[in-house]
Length: 264
Image (cartoon, rainbow, N blue to C red):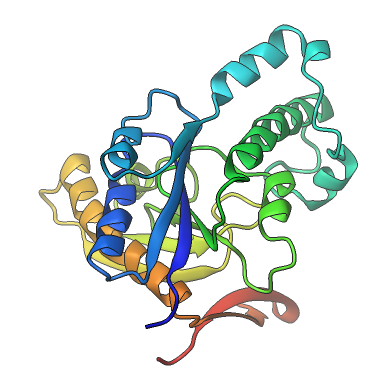
């Protein structure tokens, strides 16, 4: 069997997808093992899951960092290697006409927190970083330091909607309120935008007329717990490859990045 990959995870809440990944590693459905679990929320219940399985874990309190910066930003300088103009040129989270002061505050506070995250991650070697309900947008500052010198991205996320429809923090809620007859979930690589990275895999399910948002979420979570480990295993097998394809709305004028799944 090929060498197991090392998997790091970031969570914000209960960590049900984290548990699915841990279970898949332990049952050898994923040829990998957990290296660490990190969170932006010191009270995240998912940390107990890592503790039960003997996985190193840590917290970087984003809320406290942001609060401190807003109270007195002179005492909260960005990391020495932070370059706002470079980040601004790369980011796709804000429109170009967004207020510069607001954008600057966002990226500085996130870079301070992300530098702490990177510092906490440093002791652990990892091949893949999975976001398992991590409710913070990662910025180019963090992404570039994790993906450095890699041909394939190393940050994977699961989203509760069939992207590119319904990006954002409430994919299932947006899908349900829109009146869709089909819901789903998506695993994708992270890029500089919000839920806009190249798609690795998707699972769909029907939304019945008598479904509530709660019953729909339960259907979605069952699909998530199947899809995420399967996509991670494709990564472990070396079967994911980036490629380019014409943009579906613009023909040959602009190319987009896609993920090709290579045969076993």
